[in-house]
Each structure stands twice: as C-alpha cells, then as structure tokens.
View 1 (spheres, rainbow, N blue to C red):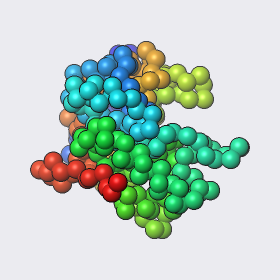
View 2 (view 1 turned 45 degrees about the horizontal axis):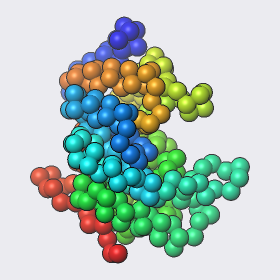
View 3 (view 1 turned 90 degrees about the vertical axis):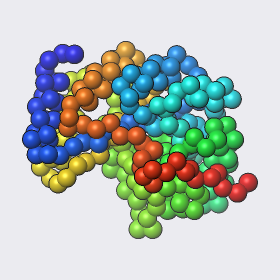
Length: 264
C-alpha cells in the first residue's frame, strides 16, 4: 500500500471509532456468466478476507458450468442481474434493459423468465435481490419487483424508488472501474479519496451506523482494480468497518429461508 491515501482513510475511520459508530461495508460484483480465472481470483479474495460478495448473474447468458463452480465458492452470493443484459433504450438514450419505454407485461415476462432460469441453474442459493443492468430500471417497473418475488433492489448511488415504492433499496456507492477512461481500474488514490470524502460527509450529516456498497466487475478488472480491492479488504480490518454479508439484507435473522422462484 502507498502511504498517503490509505493513511487518510485510516484517520477517517479513527473518527468513526472515536464516536462509537460503524460502517457496514458490502460488495457487489456484476456480469457473472461462467467460470473463469477472474472469478476464481474474486472468490479467493473473498475467502481470504471473509468478505461475502453479492454476485449478480446474467440468467439467460449464464453457462451450465457456472453452477458447479459456485458450489466451491461459498463466499459468492448469487442474485439476478437483469434477464439477458440487452439494451432496449432508443438511440441516444442511456442504456437500460428495463426503461420506462418498455411495456410492463414484457418487462415482467423477461424478469420472470430470467428468475426461473437462475433458480433452475443455481437452486436455493439465489438471493431474492434484483440488479438491473447499467444500474437502471424505471421506478414504475421497480414497484412491481416485490410481486415478482424480490425483496431487494440494488442499483448505484442516486437511484431512488418512485411514489409506488418497491423492494428494499440496496444501492452501491463506489465503483472501482473507470468506464469512460478506457474501461480500466481507477487509481487507488482516486477511489480512496472519493471514499474518504463520502465517509466524512456522511459522518457529519447522519447519525448512527451507515452502509456503503462497493461495485466490482471481475470480468473487467485489471491489476489496478485487483490491487485496490485487496488493499481495501486489508484496510477493512479497522474496527470501524464491519464486512456485511449481502444475504443479511433479505433474510430474517437466524433464517436460511429463500424466496421460491415463483410460478412456472
């Protein structure tokens, strides 16, 4: 680790400890479809640091070989990532598989088809959390996710449910990738600086403990991204941080029950 950005993070975490508060840190990784060396590396980090990771699997692109691979990766918690990760937004708009321009019946049918496929593939290990591709879903569609069997919805910071509500919102806040600068890992100084600012702002504006979600994409990680993730998980040994199992967001305490895949 280089001293400067990580030292600033340690100091900020000391402030949290001094006030008797904690940061619940959780991780989400998107676009899983098949076993790969990158998926192995993600699992190895999760095991080494006892850091469960919400693994967003694209159901209609997932390969059969993914199922036995995940059985040997107990820290990776699979959930549904859209249906086929296909953009339906007209040219010029921001990419979305479930935008407001799509008919509700077609959206529900796609999500339900993906849900059945994922349960057929992975069984009861699938968490009832929905992750829309590109972190976008029209609020009108999000409001129906509960009826489709989901108790959680995970997007990116800034996403809000509409007036009709929806399942529990589990937004991520920090992305380790620079998508517009070459699809490369962001420099540690930039990511840690963003994290320190976010923590300081929330420490002063809020009370009690907070949740922070980190967004990963193992298929796109370069050495910069992998190195940052390893260093952050080392830093998470600080007493102000608690690594949280994403399953705890949707399970009752002490319960191993999962939502069923719904009608076929």
